[in-house]
Length: 336
Image 1 (cartoon, rainbow, N blue to C red):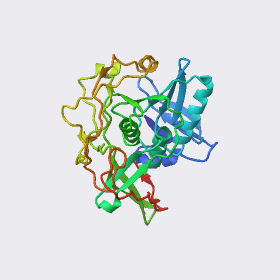
Image 2 (tube, helix red, strand yellow):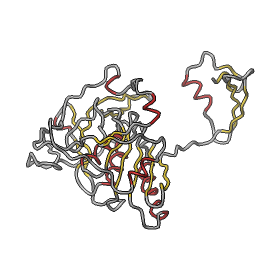
Image 3 (cartoon, rainbow, N blue to C red):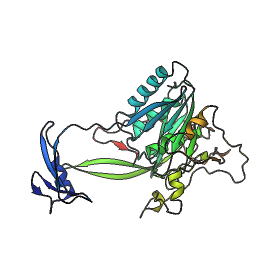
Image 4 (tube, one colour):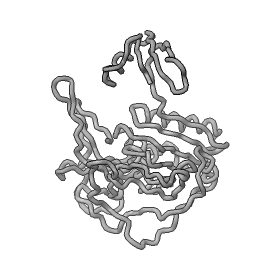
């Protein structure tokens, strides 16, 4: 617990006021006094201020032929970092890279355009995500451009209850296009679009304006992404009786107003992990319990969406989707 900043007590300060005092010019020093459990007396620390750049992309080789990439959030550097990671992993594998594990566990999301770019990196064509607002004419759709940075390598996406928003957009897009196997437990279920609108006086309003839908028309809001193969981590198994809070559990959370649902009794063969990847995934920290296969989702034979059509599974309208308009300069879309 921080008690003093440069010898001045923080008692009576709000969190924002304390943060403003701690921030300063790069290279300058600040003295912080803290109380720590088990320590007999306060501890004084002298810190040098520095620009902190979070490392949102981490990667390594899992054995000689499987690459592992972890995305901790979606900011302006996520897509660039992912491309750099795949290039480096190819070099480390000596051209023998057979598969890729994309770890989105506990990734809370971030910028919408980065979620679209990351999905586009793996999809050669088709819809990535769409939004539906109160008015039909405000609906938007984002499609993939030609090209796949992995050249069709097998991909496994890891998710859990902490994977939200942009993470769910990526996992849902790759799952619906059968481009990747989604492994883990059901995601958080944050499927709302929030628009930041500046107001006079250096303020802003963050307003929920629409909902996200996967390429097959599934709504993420409140339901999340169901994995193709469910794997409970050992640490999670130990606390299985402790419910983990998700979007649907939050007070005044938006309800899921429907979308394409899995038809009851549909006979769908279980997905199988590509050869060589299953063994690598099982060794990723934390180690998972033996997976149990679950039926995968696929689109229904009829489309319940209103124009513009999704254009991926079944063309239900001759009307072409309008190109995505650019956001106003003063606004920045976030995935919620």
